[in-house]
Image (cartoon, rainbow, N blue to C red):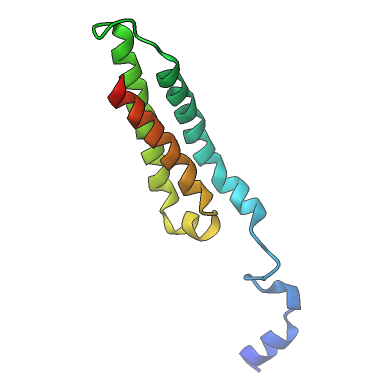
Length: 113
């Protein structure tokens, strides 16, 4: 009977690409590595913004630059993960906006300390 018989016997909800299925569980699973990268990126950006060096020769100035660069590195790593086809197809566009905003803030702080 072939494929026609298999199509008749298949239940209507057995289709892989259901329009009702928005991939909520898959988004949660794929979001874990991104959150693991972005939480330290936000923290290091916060530290870079909170550090106030007293003079241009203060060690805190180098620390603020390092923390800003580290935050930019983590955000770029997260963006590299996000541009993979599985992530682009599943995740929303706001996963691109958050790391760009964090990285821009950290970069500006690292350059202006």
